[in-house]
Length: 315
Image (cartoon, rainbow, N blue to C red; front, side):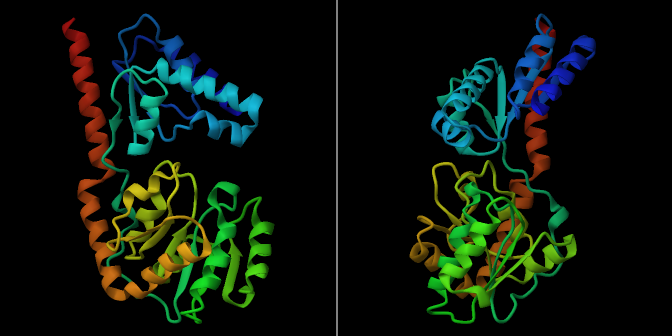
């Protein structure tokens, strides 16, 4: 309902000001925005660009919303993609999915969404004894409940290893149950939501940030951790675009799955990487501030828009 209300308000505004713009850049999340914009600006020469943070295949929509609602949502997404003259996205995964859903022109894949606002002047040392940190919502797609078993596996070789699992969500009870089942209740802290200062301290002091999510449209948590020199461990999955941000043994590792042995082994590699891995992780971040910056992304999109506007004026 909220998505429909927003799209209706967007369409109404654009219809009233349809002669006021040379170009518009509109988020395609929710996809109803695409229909509203296309209808409001029909018959004008306004250049329209739609930004797709995520694109889901049909099976994912069905799994998330049930067959009836999922098929409707997927059909709406597919229709929006067909109506999109120019699409921008922020991962190769989204680019592939846009093409699979029927996008007519190659999408603009942004260099990155990295901002220097998270950068710290001095890379902090990892705390002793070491701990892993998770930051995010406790929902099924994040697979937070896989962390305790992986921690238990890693503690066979590093008995002092702990975990700090931040955040809240509908899967909180499942996470607590997984902690008890893995026998690591004395090695796991579950503080819930914390202040910004406490969050930064938790990430900066962690030996590794672990995110076993199955679905990410970009992966800002990888970047946020790297700003502190904290490497990451992710889990490979067809819907996880954040793995595109990880260079093995440079800023982290990608576990083949969330199997306790595979995820635990990746965690051990990151913890044992020590100061050398932290230095490489921070170097990756410093390079990304130039090569993958949000400013470069904005310049890329604006250059495309200006070229399209100029082409319209020459017609």
